[in-house]
Length: 114
Image (tube, rainbow, N blue to C red):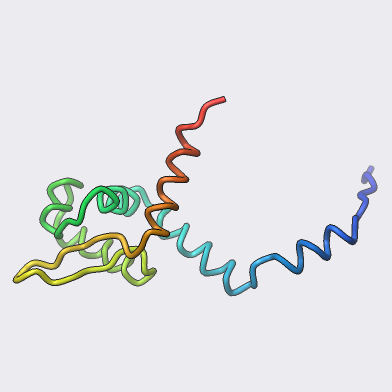
């Protein structure tokens, strides 16, 4: 037996007005999907602590430099990380403070116990 559901049209209208556009929802979901991979998340967390090169990340993650480069390329496409040249090295860091805040907020959520 199906139960009746009420609809508060005022609430629906308010939320519809303030809800993100479909293209924004898709981009947000895509960013979270990119961060959903444990290796990429470890890279992002490490870059939240300090700027690092591929060699540093490879040693830290215990994966090949080509594996790290592949993950960094994906993260860079989503504007999660950025790079800069320092002599022969390419240094990687998080793209902006929003990424740092997102990671900190999520970590706090994970650590929160009731």
